[in-house]
Image (cartoon, rainbow, N blue to C red; front, side):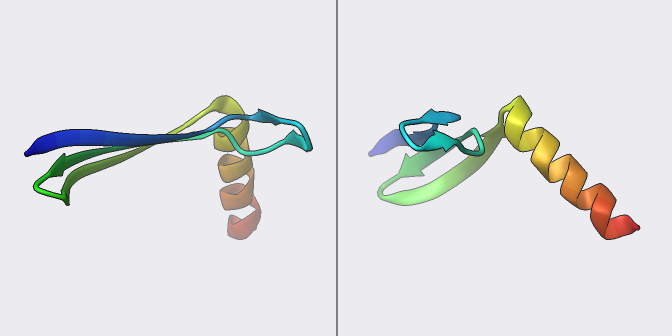
Length: 56
């Protein structure tokens, strides 16, 4: 049975900001057929800065 599942990690939380990410999965008979991760601008900038720092 095809379906989908998703999880959102919002940036604003009661304890402050966190990395903003959304995961999306397409499922077929309980198995993941496609998995996608979408980064918001805060998460993208953190990842970008970490890559640049690692290259130095």
